[in-house]
Image (cartoon, rainbow, N blue to C red):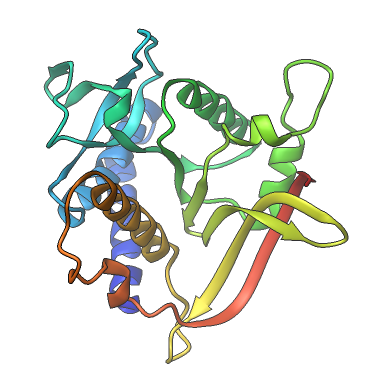
Length: 256
């Protein structure tokens, strides 16, 4: 399965490059198509108990989110408030995950992502993912966080602002999958970490596999919590060997 996800990662990047062959100077259109590439992958490989679409989230008090590249929501128990073609407005209670998709990542793009997820966090408590096709080097991300201009005089993330940051950050070229974590270095901090694993043949496990398992497991947890399930059902991640730890990367944002 490791080689399979490597092939799928390559396929997603090939589809992105195919788009760029024909549409070279219209970034909004490229952005829309890159979102659709990932939506199509998730629609094919996630349980049919959820829907994978684009649109907006409406809170109980009437607040409307910014447009979401990918919404994963419970379409069995919740119908959209509004739909036109493939764009929906869904209740905040129905949303399981929000995924922001970027073709590339630099400091200004990343800072806009932080602002975006701050808005999303005011509307829903759903899990927040950032997915990047042509991702920057993982070592640059700490600097992107540290250079973010906060509102007010206090220029550092804290426990409150940390909640609005993306829960997981996935790059497929460069390949890494960062998660919020406690980080132990010179002192204990809260930040992000990424573990890099190899399979039994020494092949690096793709970040796309880690991303997919994370989203799939999130849906399983949601289903188990909200519905009666067959206790004998084997969980999806049991099909994937975690592998042997190859390397580890982490950075802190603020003290515990």
